[in-house]
Length: 406
Image (cartoon, rainbow, N blue to C red; front, side, top):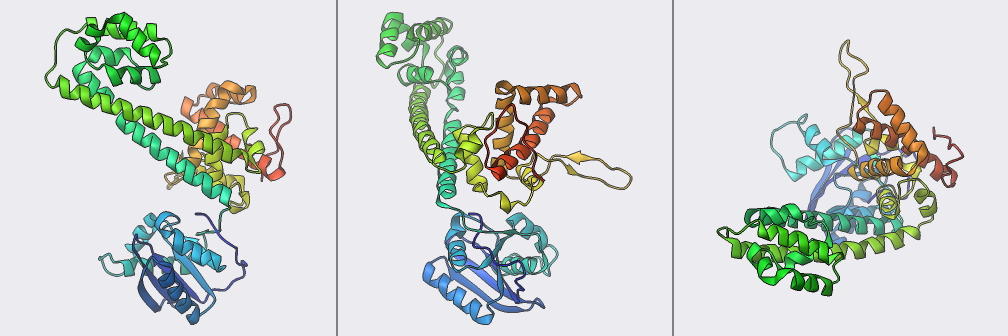
C-alpha cells in the first residue's frame, strides 16, 4: 500500500509514533521531541483495538507523525485506519530498522525496542517515504499481479518434474520441452520407455490428437525415438512415473490459472486512464503496464523526478567512491524489483520491435558496453520517456522525440 491524504509540508510534529508490525499484534511506541517515551503498548491487529490506540495517541498531541516498518499485507488495516483519518504516515524499511538498532543501547531485540527505533528514526530523519492511499485500480492490479507471481513460482517449483524424468528416462527429457502444453499432456499418460513402446506410434498419435495436442505426429515420433534408445528399467521407475504424472497435471492446471489471471489483468489494465499512454511505449504490453501501475499507481508526483523513479527501479547506477577513487559506479543494492523487471524486460522487447531502441542499444554496444549494460542504459532512457509521456498525457510516437522530464 502506498500513501495517503497528504498533510501540509509545514506540519510541525510534536510527537512521533512508531509501530512495529506483527501478524496478530503490533507494538506502538510514542516519543516526544526530546526522545522521551510517552506511550508503549502492544495492541491486537483488530479495528476496535487500533482505534482505541489511535485515540490515546491523539489525546497526547494531535501533531503526530506515524511510522511503520511494513507497508502492506499484515499492516494494511492499521495503515488504512491512519490514512482514513488523514494522518501523516511514513515508511521505514525493516532492514533500515535492523541496522539502526545497532546504534541503540542494548543488544536484545524486542518489539518495544523495534517500535522505539522506528519512532526515533521518524523523529530524526526527513527522507522517509510518505505513504498515501492508492486508487482501487492500482490496488486491484497489485493483488492480481502478486497472485500471478505466486502462480509462476508454483509452476517453476513443479517443473522439477524435469529432474524426476531425467532420473528414469533421460532421453525423453532431452526430447521434450516441458514448458509447452503438448509434452505435458504426453507426460500425463506416458512416462516410461516401456509404456511408450507398448502403445505404439499410431495409437499414441490418436491419443494426443484426441486431446487437441498440436503436431501430434512430430511429438509421437520424438517420444517413440527416445523410447527406442532406452530398454533398461531404472530402480524406482514405477513410483517416479506416478510423481511425474501428478506434477504434469499440476503444471497444466497452473498454466490454465495463469492464462485466466492474465485475461483479468489485461482487462483491468485497459480500464485505467493511463493505459493507452503506457502501452504506447514499445515493449510494454498489458502485463508489464499493469505491473508498472501496481508499483507506482501512475502517480509520478510521488517520486518528484524521473531520476528518483529510475533509482527506485534499479536502472540508475550509484557511486561508490572512496578516497582518491571517483566515478566508481555500481548497480544499486536496494531497488524495487518489480519496477526493474518492467523497464528491463520492456527494453529487451523494444530492441526487437523499435528502430530507435535498437539503434540506441547498438550504439552502446559499439561503445564497448556489455549486453546487460547496454540494456540497462536503454531501460534508464526509457524511464525518462515514460515519465514525460505520463506527465504530458501523450502517447509515444516514433517520429516525434519526447522531451525528458526534469
